[in-house]
Image 1: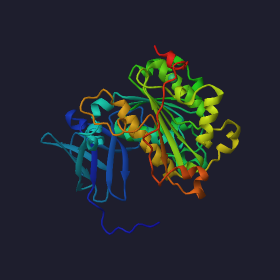
Image 2 (image 1 turned 45 degrees about the horizontal axis):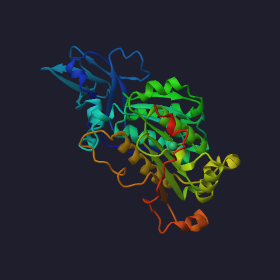
Image 3 (image 1 turned 90 degrees about the vertical axis):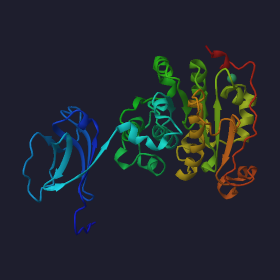
Image 4 (image 1 turned 60 degrees about the horizontal axis):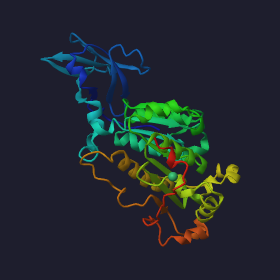
Length: 379
Ligand SMILES: [Zn+2]
Protein backbone atom coordinates (compact mmCIF):
# COMPACT_ATOMS: atom_id res chain seq x y z
CA UNK A 1 0.00 0.00 0.00
CA UNK A 2 1.26 3.46 -0.87
CA UNK A 3 1.55 6.07 1.84
CA UNK A 4 1.16 9.65 0.71
CA UNK A 5 3.34 12.08 2.63
CA UNK A 6 3.92 15.61 1.50
CA UNK A 7 6.44 16.50 4.17
CA UNK A 8 8.39 14.30 6.57
CA UNK A 9 7.51 14.74 10.23
CA UNK A 10 10.11 16.30 12.48
CA UNK A 11 12.53 13.52 13.42
CA UNK A 12 12.15 12.15 16.96
CA UNK A 13 14.77 10.09 18.84
CA UNK A 14 13.85 7.90 21.81
CA UNK A 15 17.08 7.10 23.65
CA UNK A 16 18.16 5.62 27.00
CA UNK A 17 18.92 8.29 29.61
CA UNK A 18 22.18 6.43 30.37
CA UNK A 19 23.63 7.86 27.16
CA UNK A 20 23.66 11.30 28.76
CA UNK A 21 24.91 10.11 32.13
CA UNK A 22 27.77 8.23 30.48
CA UNK A 23 28.66 11.05 28.04
CA UNK A 24 28.46 8.28 25.49
CA UNK A 25 30.24 8.26 22.12
CA UNK A 26 29.71 5.35 19.72
CA UNK A 27 27.17 3.30 17.77
CA UNK A 28 23.41 3.28 18.35
CA UNK A 29 21.28 0.20 17.68
CA UNK A 30 17.54 -0.15 17.35
CA UNK A 31 14.73 0.72 14.98
CA UNK A 32 14.08 3.53 12.52
CA UNK A 33 10.53 4.03 11.30
CA UNK A 34 10.72 6.00 8.06
CA UNK A 35 6.94 6.57 7.88
CA UNK A 36 6.78 8.39 11.23
CA UNK A 37 10.44 9.49 11.07
CA UNK A 38 11.11 8.27 14.62
CA UNK A 39 14.21 6.49 15.92
CA UNK A 40 14.06 4.05 18.83
CA UNK A 41 17.52 3.51 20.32
CA UNK A 42 17.43 0.33 22.41
CA UNK A 43 21.12 -0.60 22.62
CA UNK A 44 24.38 1.24 22.25
CA UNK A 45 28.15 0.87 22.43
CA UNK A 46 29.61 -2.45 21.36
CA UNK A 47 26.28 -4.25 21.92
CA UNK A 48 27.92 -7.53 20.95
CA UNK A 49 24.85 -9.58 21.75
CA UNK A 50 22.43 -7.67 19.59
CA UNK A 51 21.27 -8.52 16.11
CA UNK A 52 19.64 -5.11 15.88
CA UNK A 53 20.66 -2.81 13.05
CA UNK A 54 22.85 0.24 13.60
CA UNK A 55 20.61 3.29 13.26
CA UNK A 56 23.09 6.04 14.05
CA UNK A 57 26.00 7.13 16.18
CA UNK A 58 27.10 9.71 18.68
CA UNK A 59 30.28 11.45 17.48
CA UNK A 60 32.84 13.63 19.20
CA UNK A 61 32.85 16.42 16.62
CA UNK A 62 30.06 17.99 14.61
CA UNK A 63 29.94 16.92 10.99
CA UNK A 64 28.36 18.34 7.92
CA UNK A 65 25.61 16.05 6.69
CA UNK A 66 23.73 16.36 3.44
CA UNK A 67 20.22 17.80 3.36
CA UNK A 68 18.65 14.52 2.26
CA UNK A 69 20.51 12.12 4.56
CA UNK A 70 18.43 10.24 7.12
CA UNK A 71 21.56 9.24 8.98
CA UNK A 72 21.22 9.92 12.70
CA UNK A 73 24.09 11.75 14.36
CA UNK A 74 24.33 12.74 18.01
CA UNK A 75 26.75 15.44 19.17
CA UNK A 76 27.53 16.93 22.54
CA UNK A 77 26.74 20.61 22.91
CA UNK A 78 27.22 22.26 26.32
CA UNK A 79 26.93 18.92 28.17
CA UNK A 80 23.72 18.11 26.29
CA UNK A 81 23.22 15.41 23.68
CA UNK A 82 21.75 16.90 20.50
CA UNK A 83 20.55 14.67 17.66
CA UNK A 84 20.28 15.59 14.01
CA UNK A 85 19.01 13.80 10.95
CA UNK A 86 20.93 15.19 8.01
CA UNK A 87 20.60 18.91 8.60
CA UNK A 88 17.38 18.64 10.58
CA UNK A 89 17.44 18.92 14.33
CA UNK A 90 15.64 16.05 16.10
CA UNK A 91 13.36 16.12 19.10
CA UNK A 92 15.06 13.99 21.78
CA UNK A 93 13.02 11.84 24.21
CA UNK A 94 15.24 10.26 26.83
CA UNK A 95 13.76 7.32 28.70
CA UNK A 96 14.50 5.35 31.88
CA UNK A 97 13.52 1.85 30.80
CA UNK A 98 11.61 0.39 33.76
CA UNK A 99 10.44 3.72 35.14
CA UNK A 100 8.87 4.70 31.84
CA UNK A 101 7.44 1.29 30.97
CA UNK A 102 5.60 0.94 34.26
CA UNK A 103 4.83 4.60 35.04
CA UNK A 104 1.09 4.12 34.47
CA UNK A 105 0.95 1.33 37.07
CA UNK A 106 2.29 3.53 39.85
CA UNK A 107 0.16 3.99 42.93
CA UNK A 108 -1.67 0.75 42.10
CA UNK A 109 1.10 -1.78 41.59
CA UNK A 110 4.54 -0.85 42.90
CA UNK A 111 7.12 -1.66 40.26
CA UNK A 112 9.88 -2.29 42.82
CA UNK A 113 7.68 -4.90 44.52
CA UNK A 114 6.32 -6.48 41.36
CA UNK A 115 9.74 -6.99 39.75
CA UNK A 116 10.60 -9.39 42.58
CA UNK A 117 7.44 -11.46 42.09
CA UNK A 118 7.49 -14.80 40.32
CA UNK A 119 4.95 -16.97 38.53
CA UNK A 120 5.02 -20.53 37.27
CA UNK A 121 2.73 -20.93 34.26
CA UNK A 122 1.82 -24.47 33.29
CA UNK A 123 0.41 -24.37 29.76
CA UNK A 124 1.23 -21.52 27.36
CA UNK A 125 -1.75 -21.69 25.02
CA UNK A 126 -4.57 -19.16 24.76
CA UNK A 127 -4.94 -18.91 28.55
CA UNK A 128 -1.29 -19.14 29.61
CA UNK A 129 -0.04 -16.68 27.01
CA UNK A 130 -2.55 -14.06 28.16
CA UNK A 131 -1.71 -14.69 31.82
CA UNK A 132 2.02 -14.34 31.08
CA UNK A 133 1.75 -11.10 29.14
CA UNK A 134 -0.73 -9.45 31.50
CA UNK A 135 1.50 -10.28 34.46
CA UNK A 136 4.51 -8.89 32.57
CA UNK A 137 2.48 -5.68 32.05
CA UNK A 138 1.73 -5.68 35.77
CA UNK A 139 5.51 -5.73 36.34
CA UNK A 140 6.09 -9.33 37.43
CA UNK A 141 9.83 -9.87 36.90
CA UNK A 142 10.28 -13.66 37.03
CA UNK A 143 8.59 -16.33 34.94
CA UNK A 144 8.83 -20.09 34.63
CA UNK A 145 6.96 -21.12 31.46
CA UNK A 146 6.05 -24.79 30.92
CA UNK A 147 4.50 -26.24 27.74
CA UNK A 148 5.59 -29.00 25.36
CA UNK A 149 3.65 -27.77 22.33
CA UNK A 150 4.65 -25.67 19.31
CA UNK A 151 2.68 -22.82 17.73
CA UNK A 152 0.39 -23.79 14.82
CA UNK A 153 -1.84 -21.73 12.55
CA UNK A 154 -4.99 -22.89 14.34
CA UNK A 155 -3.65 -21.39 17.60
CA UNK A 156 -3.41 -17.85 16.30
CA UNK A 157 -7.04 -16.72 16.60
CA UNK A 158 -6.86 -17.05 20.38
CA UNK A 159 -3.18 -16.82 21.29
CA UNK A 160 -1.10 -13.74 22.12
CA UNK A 161 1.56 -14.74 19.56
CA UNK A 162 1.20 -14.62 15.78
CA UNK A 163 2.12 -16.02 12.37
CA UNK A 164 5.84 -15.29 12.77
CA UNK A 165 5.81 -17.63 15.80
CA UNK A 166 4.36 -20.69 14.04
CA UNK A 167 6.72 -23.63 14.54
CA UNK A 168 8.35 -22.23 17.69
CA UNK A 169 7.84 -23.82 21.07
CA UNK A 170 5.05 -21.82 22.70
CA UNK A 171 7.27 -21.20 25.73
CA UNK A 172 9.88 -19.50 23.55
CA UNK A 173 7.33 -17.48 21.58
CA UNK A 174 5.79 -16.22 24.83
CA UNK A 175 9.23 -15.51 26.31
CA UNK A 176 9.96 -13.22 23.34
CA UNK A 177 6.68 -11.36 23.87
CA UNK A 178 7.45 -10.91 27.57
CA UNK A 179 10.81 -9.38 26.71
CA UNK A 180 9.06 -6.96 24.35
CA UNK A 181 7.18 -5.68 27.40
CA UNK A 182 10.00 -5.88 29.94
CA UNK A 183 13.48 -6.63 28.54
CA UNK A 184 14.78 -7.11 32.10
CA UNK A 185 12.30 -9.90 33.00
CA UNK A 186 13.90 -13.25 33.86
CA UNK A 187 12.15 -15.99 31.91
CA UNK A 188 12.97 -19.68 32.37
CA UNK A 189 11.38 -22.11 29.92
CA UNK A 190 10.68 -25.84 30.02
CA UNK A 191 9.44 -27.27 26.71
CA UNK A 192 7.91 -30.30 28.37
CA UNK A 193 4.83 -31.15 30.42
CA UNK A 194 4.58 -30.05 34.05
CA UNK A 195 4.96 -33.62 35.35
CA UNK A 196 8.36 -33.92 33.61
CA UNK A 197 9.92 -30.77 35.07
CA UNK A 198 12.65 -31.74 37.59
CA UNK A 199 11.77 -30.76 41.15
CA UNK A 200 14.97 -28.76 41.62
CA UNK A 201 13.75 -26.33 38.95
CA UNK A 202 10.82 -25.46 41.23
CA UNK A 203 13.02 -25.43 44.30
CA UNK A 204 15.13 -22.47 43.16
CA UNK A 205 12.18 -20.71 41.58
CA UNK A 206 9.81 -20.97 44.55
CA UNK A 207 12.31 -19.17 46.77
CA UNK A 208 11.03 -15.97 45.21
CA UNK A 209 7.57 -16.47 46.71
CA UNK A 210 5.94 -17.61 43.50
CA UNK A 211 2.34 -18.40 42.51
CA UNK A 212 1.73 -21.46 40.32
CA UNK A 213 -0.96 -21.13 37.64
CA UNK A 214 -2.59 -24.13 35.94
CA UNK A 215 -3.55 -23.17 32.39
CA UNK A 216 -3.22 -26.59 30.77
CA UNK A 217 -6.22 -28.11 29.01
CA UNK A 218 -6.68 -31.04 31.38
CA UNK A 219 -7.63 -31.51 34.99
CA UNK A 220 -4.82 -34.02 35.58
CA UNK A 221 -2.31 -31.25 34.97
CA UNK A 222 -4.07 -29.14 37.58
CA UNK A 223 -3.87 -31.96 40.14
CA UNK A 224 -0.13 -32.03 39.63
CA UNK A 225 0.17 -28.23 39.80
CA UNK A 226 -1.78 -28.38 43.08
CA UNK A 227 0.74 -30.91 44.37
CA UNK A 228 3.62 -28.55 43.52
CA UNK A 229 1.72 -25.77 45.30
CA UNK A 230 1.43 -27.84 48.50
CA UNK A 231 4.96 -29.22 48.26
CA UNK A 232 6.59 -25.80 47.92
CA UNK A 233 4.05 -23.86 49.96
CA UNK A 234 3.04 -21.42 47.22
CA UNK A 235 -0.50 -20.35 46.19
CA UNK A 236 -2.20 -22.09 43.26
CA UNK A 237 -4.66 -20.77 40.67
CA UNK A 238 -6.42 -22.93 38.09
CA UNK A 239 -8.22 -21.46 35.10
CA UNK A 240 -10.38 -23.85 33.08
CA UNK A 241 -13.20 -23.78 30.56
CA UNK A 242 -16.46 -25.45 29.82
CA UNK A 243 -17.82 -26.29 26.40
CA UNK A 244 -17.07 -23.63 23.76
CA UNK A 245 -15.88 -21.41 26.62
CA UNK A 246 -19.51 -20.46 27.29
CA UNK A 247 -18.41 -20.57 30.92
CA UNK A 248 -15.31 -21.27 32.93
CA UNK A 249 -14.11 -22.04 36.41
CA UNK A 250 -11.45 -20.44 38.53
CA UNK A 251 -10.03 -22.10 41.60
CA UNK A 252 -7.42 -20.79 44.01
CA UNK A 253 -5.80 -22.12 47.15
CA UNK A 254 -3.20 -21.02 49.67
CA UNK A 255 -1.36 -23.91 51.40
CA UNK A 256 -1.83 -23.95 55.22
CA UNK A 257 -4.70 -21.47 54.90
CA UNK A 258 -7.30 -23.03 52.60
CA UNK A 259 -8.42 -26.45 51.34
CA UNK A 260 -6.53 -27.52 48.21
CA UNK A 261 -7.65 -28.50 44.69
CA UNK A 262 -7.52 -32.15 45.65
CA UNK A 263 -9.81 -31.46 48.64
CA UNK A 264 -12.36 -30.03 46.20
CA UNK A 265 -12.14 -32.48 43.31
CA UNK A 266 -11.07 -35.42 45.40
CA UNK A 267 -9.25 -38.57 44.50
CA UNK A 268 -12.07 -40.97 45.32
CA UNK A 269 -14.09 -42.16 42.34
CA UNK A 270 -17.31 -40.82 43.79
CA UNK A 271 -16.23 -37.24 44.22
CA UNK A 272 -14.52 -36.98 40.85
CA UNK A 273 -17.50 -38.36 38.98
CA UNK A 274 -19.91 -36.08 40.80
CA UNK A 275 -17.91 -33.01 40.02
CA UNK A 276 -17.31 -33.82 36.42
CA UNK A 277 -20.96 -34.60 35.79
CA UNK A 278 -21.98 -31.30 37.31
CA UNK A 279 -19.29 -29.21 35.69
CA UNK A 280 -18.74 -30.36 32.17
CA UNK A 281 -15.23 -29.13 31.81
CA UNK A 282 -15.15 -30.50 28.28
CA UNK A 283 -11.55 -29.52 27.65
CA UNK A 284 -10.53 -31.99 30.28
CA UNK A 285 -12.22 -35.31 29.60
CA UNK A 286 -9.42 -37.79 29.09
CA UNK A 287 -11.52 -39.93 26.74
CA UNK A 288 -12.27 -36.90 24.59
CA UNK A 289 -8.69 -35.79 24.33
CA UNK A 290 -8.63 -35.98 20.53
CA UNK A 291 -11.78 -33.87 20.32
CA UNK A 292 -10.76 -31.41 22.98
CA UNK A 293 -7.76 -30.43 20.88
CA UNK A 294 -10.30 -28.89 18.54
CA UNK A 295 -12.70 -27.60 21.13
CA UNK A 296 -13.96 -24.28 19.78
CA UNK A 297 -14.20 -21.18 21.89
CA UNK A 298 -13.48 -17.63 20.88
CA UNK A 299 -10.68 -15.51 22.22
CA UNK A 300 -12.98 -12.85 23.70
CA UNK A 301 -14.80 -15.43 25.84
CA UNK A 302 -11.59 -17.12 26.94
CA UNK A 303 -10.00 -13.77 27.78
CA UNK A 304 -12.94 -12.54 29.86
CA UNK A 305 -12.70 -15.53 32.17
CA UNK A 306 -8.91 -15.54 32.17
CA UNK A 307 -8.79 -11.87 33.15
CA UNK A 308 -10.68 -12.67 36.36
CA UNK A 309 -8.07 -15.31 37.11
CA UNK A 310 -5.28 -12.78 36.46
CA UNK A 311 -6.80 -10.31 38.94
CA UNK A 312 -6.81 -13.09 41.54
CA UNK A 313 -3.18 -13.92 40.77
CA UNK A 314 -2.23 -10.25 41.37
CA UNK A 315 -4.01 -10.42 44.74
CA UNK A 316 -2.23 -13.64 45.71
CA UNK A 317 1.17 -12.24 44.68
CA UNK A 318 0.53 -9.25 46.93
CA UNK A 319 -0.97 -10.94 50.00
CA UNK A 320 1.80 -9.44 52.15
CA UNK A 321 2.36 -6.18 50.26
CA UNK A 322 1.63 -3.17 52.50
CA UNK A 323 -0.91 -0.71 51.04
CA UNK A 324 -1.95 -3.12 48.29
CA UNK A 325 -5.71 -3.10 47.76
CA UNK A 326 -6.92 -6.60 46.80
CA UNK A 327 -9.36 -6.72 43.92
CA UNK A 328 -11.08 -10.08 44.25
CA UNK A 329 -9.57 -12.34 46.85
CA UNK A 330 -11.80 -11.10 49.68
CA UNK A 331 -14.96 -11.44 47.60
CA UNK A 332 -14.70 -14.49 45.38
CA UNK A 333 -14.99 -17.89 46.98
CA UNK A 334 -12.19 -20.36 46.36
CA UNK A 335 -14.07 -21.86 43.45
CA UNK A 336 -15.91 -19.50 41.11
CA UNK A 337 -17.90 -20.14 37.98
CA UNK A 338 -17.94 -17.44 35.33
CA UNK A 339 -20.49 -17.33 32.55
CA UNK A 340 -20.00 -15.71 29.15
CA UNK A 341 -23.47 -16.57 27.88
CA UNK A 342 -26.39 -18.43 29.38
CA UNK A 343 -27.80 -19.12 25.92
CA UNK A 344 -28.28 -22.87 25.51
CA UNK A 345 -27.62 -22.62 21.75
CA UNK A 346 -23.98 -22.09 22.66
CA UNK A 347 -23.64 -23.69 26.08
CA UNK A 348 -26.18 -26.49 25.90
CA UNK A 349 -28.59 -27.14 28.78
CA UNK A 350 -25.73 -26.54 31.27
CA UNK A 351 -25.88 -22.87 30.33
CA UNK A 352 -29.27 -22.60 32.00
CA UNK A 353 -27.78 -22.89 35.49
CA UNK A 354 -26.67 -19.28 35.04
CA UNK A 355 -29.24 -16.55 35.63
CA UNK A 356 -27.67 -14.05 33.25
CA UNK A 357 -24.60 -13.58 31.02
CA UNK A 358 -21.38 -12.44 32.73
CA UNK A 359 -22.56 -13.92 36.03
CA UNK A 360 -19.73 -14.67 38.46
CA UNK A 361 -20.61 -16.96 41.37
CA UNK A 362 -19.38 -16.06 44.83
CA UNK A 363 -21.10 -18.64 47.01
CA UNK A 364 -19.63 -22.09 46.25
CA UNK A 365 -18.04 -23.42 49.42
CA UNK A 366 -14.92 -25.57 49.34
CA UNK A 367 -14.50 -27.86 52.32
CA UNK A 368 -11.26 -29.27 53.65
CA UNK A 369 -10.80 -33.00 53.31
CA UNK A 370 -9.16 -34.20 56.53
CA UNK A 371 -7.71 -37.19 54.71
CA UNK A 372 -6.45 -35.23 51.72
CA UNK A 373 -3.04 -36.73 50.82
CA UNK A 374 -1.92 -33.59 49.00
CA UNK A 375 -2.59 -31.17 51.87
CA UNK A 376 -0.36 -33.39 53.99
CA UNK A 377 2.59 -32.81 51.67
CA UNK A 378 3.09 -29.38 53.17
CA UNK A 379 6.54 -28.85 54.57
ZN1 LIG B 1 -6.19 -30.93 50.13
